[in-house]
Each structure stands twice: as structure tokens, then as C-alpha cells.
Amino acid sequence: MNHSIVKSAIRSMVLTLMAAILIIEISSFFLIQQDGERARELFGDSVEAYGNYWENKLDETADSMLGFIGIETGVMYRQLCESDRKLKVEIAKTQLHTQIQQMNARYGNELTTFVYVPDRDIYFSANEKGLSYANYQEMKQAISKYIQEHIVAAGDKWKILMVNDTPYIFKIYHMYNGYIGSLYSAERVLDGLYDKKADWFLEILDSDKQNVLEKGEKHAGKTVSYESQLKGTEVTISVSVKSGRLYNNTGFGLLIFCGTLFLAMILITVVWGREARRVFFPLEKLRLAMERYSEGEMDTRLKVLNNGSQIDLLYKTYNNMADQIQNLKIQVYEKELERQRINSHFLKVQIQPHFYTNILNLIYGMAQMKDFRSIQQLSLVSGKYFRYLLGQKGTFVPLSEEMNCLNSYAEIQRYRYQDKFETSMEIQEGLEEQLVLPMIVQTFFANSLKHNIMRVPLLKVKVSVRSVEKEGLKITIMDNGVGFDPEILKRIENGESIEENGEHIGIQNVKERIREFYGKDGKMEIHSVPGKTEVVLYLPHIM
Image (cartoon, rainbow, N blue to C red; front, side, top):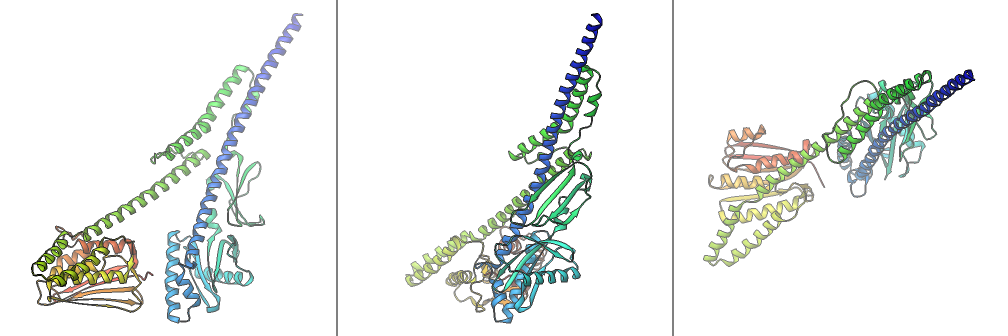
């Protein structure tokens, strides 16, 4: 009986221990599975987020191309395709080429954008970085062949184009008798996601799910795979990784060899604590960091240990993404501050109390002389001037309106200075609707009167506007005054501040506005000697 009781006790202890171990194993298995599921979800979210990034990029590229050929915006493209005048075609070709180069620059020169008019044997492109001349010719032939063999429809998705065994993701639009399209290297798409240390295997699949490009090495054994079908394309990004790279179950097998419940509990506690430190707590930190970031704490960052784990990779990805977003916001904010500063200076140029009081004094003097006809004329021309000056205007105004304002300003000054100055204005025919920044010409006209009217017997000011082949629009303001002080002229050329008690703020403001709104396409030159001063503004054509 005693022997049977011992056996029963041993059997009960063994069964209890086995039950405890089984419960612990099941619990551990469940927790590890949950851990793996979370890691797989994060893995899928990362791939999906990268796919969304390329979807947005391709949509933006498509919108940019549509902007070049739209009915309202694609003037140059239509002129290139349909104009019978060779000069217009060449101008359109040059300007459209510049526009697609600017578009490529906005996207970091990661793509090739081309314009192709088969009937006129016109083909030009803005190419991605590192594209050789041989690659350029091969790409041109591949595009030409595709257009000859296929019907290009507006609803076509982004597709795969093989250029000498090199896959590209491309889209083409057909308008009038020409084509415009963009190509991204499939290799570049995978490069943005590939991490050799992470041991990922990447593929680009076409509409038939056939592999057209791969990166990394295929894995043997159990893997986790995820596919991201890019919307609006026939392209799928496939990513696979060894399951062990997503989550680690080291210590799981040790529980099988536990001899006692006490040892099993210790081991499970250790495993739980270890996994919690390695996965659960870091994931919780990531979640809390993302919540704080979404609530506006833009400086939230996670400490990276550089231990090669997937959690570390997620931390790096989060930190890089947060830095890029913050840098972008800073750039946008600084850009807006710069524009506000320049516009603030622009307003200072417009607000000239002494000019208003001079007009009122003129009217008062005319009233004393009972020169009512002159009062009427001065009031009318002043009304036109102030209506333009204080009215609502966009960033740019037609040249005709700017010159009408200049005429009004000159007419007002003529009542004050009588016959002490002469003006002449010449505008090349066809340029009246060109768009320019407001007050850009009057600033120099007013500066010429202000500094010369009392210093020369008869001040002559000439304003001419004409079109030049390379620079675009050339505006010249020339006078026979005493000229600029050499020191002031040197400071203007060096980009230094020339504001002294409010003097010359207009010239500085014009220079800053040209730089801000035209970039490298606009420039200002001043040539001045006693007896002749010439200010030349080169601005791009804008209709």
C-alpha cells in the first residue's frame, strides 16, 4: 500500500509537473506567437508604408506631366506639337525642356522625363543621375518601339518597360500628336527599401506576377513574405525575410527540459522578462513615441542601440522619418518667413507718406490758384495710381497694368516738377500680357527722379521692354542723372544691405523679390557712370 502511495504521489507529482510544464509551454507558445504576429504586422506596415510612398510619388509625377499638357497649362506643349512656325516650335522646345528639368530636380533627378513628337522627329528628355549616353539611346529606342506597338490611353496604369534587360516603371500620356512620359528605375525603387543587414529578399513583379527584378538572396526555411500592390500601377513589391529576423524565440526549447515546476516558473519568468525587454517594452516605447509625435511633440526620438535587431531597425526608420518630416516643416516654415519678410519690405516701399502729402499740397496750391481743371486731372490720375497700388493683386500682374501704373506715377510727378524731366516708354508688341512682379519697374523710375531731379538741368528717363532669346524678358530703365555712388553700387553687386535710414530699400527689395520668385531665371544688372545710369532686369517669360 505504501509502495502504491509513493507511486501515486510520484505519478501525481509527475503529472502535475507535466501539466505545469504543458501550461507554461502553451502560454509561452501563445506569447511568442503573439510576439511574432506583432512583428509581422509591423513588418507588413513598413512595406505598406513604403508602397504608399511610391504610390504618392508616382501620382505626383503623373499630375506634373498632366500639368505640361493640360488645356489651360500646356501652352508650350501644344505649340511644340501644332505650331507651323519654326521659331515658336524651338522656343516651346527650349522652355518645355527647362520645365521638365525643373520637375526632375524637384524629385532629386531620380527619374527620366521625356517629350516625343514622332511626326516632327522631336525627342528630348531630362534624365536621371548617372544615365550614360548609351543608356539614353537605348531608352529612346525602347520608348519609340513601345509607342509604335501600343495604343497609349489616358487611363493606362504605370507599367514595366524593359530597356536592354533593365526594368523601368513608366507611364506615358498622349495629347495632340505628341507624347510625354516618365520612367523610374525599378532598381531605384528596391534600393530605397533594401537593407543588406536586415537580410531581406526583394522582388519587383509585373501584372502577371512574374519576377522582373530581385535584390538580395532567397531564403531557405521558414520565411515571412509580404506583397504591396502599388495602386494605379501594374507593379507589385514583394518582400520576404526569415522569420527568425522578425522575432527571436531563443529559450523556448529550454522549457522542455525543465525538471521541476519551480525551475519551470523561473525559466518562464526569465523568458517573459527577456522578451518583454527585447520586444514588448520597445514596441510600447515606439507606440508612445508615435502618439507623442502625432500630438505635436516633434522632438520625440528613440534611442538606437545599433544591435542589428528588427526593433532597432524600426527605431532607426522612425527616427529617420521624424527627422525628414521635421526638416521639411522647417524648410517650409523658413521659406514662408522669407516670403513674408520680402513682402513686408514690399509694403514698406509702397507706403510713402511724404508722397501722399506732396499730392495733397499740390492740390491745395492748385485750389489757391483756382486751377480746377488741373485739380480734376491730378485727382483722376492719382486715383488710378492708388487704386492699383492699394488694390488686391496676385504674386504677378500683367506688364500692361504695371506700365499703366508707371504712367500714372510719372503724370503725378509732372504736376510737381513741371518740365524738369522727360520720359519715354517703349514696349515690344506682343509683350503686354507678360506677367511680372508688381512695382518692379516703378522702384527704379522713382529712384531716378528722387536722386537726380534737382541735380541735372533736364532729367531724361527711358523705359524699354523687349524680348531676348536667351534671358526672356529684358526691361531697361535708363537716365542721364549723376549715377550711383561707387560704394553703394559695390554693395548692391555683393548682395550687402544698402538700407540707410530707409534709403535704397526699394532696390534691395526688388533684388530679393527677383531671387525669391524667379530663382536663377531672373537677375538684375546696374551699369552706372556720371551722366548715364542703366538698370537692366532679365525675367523669364510668363503668360
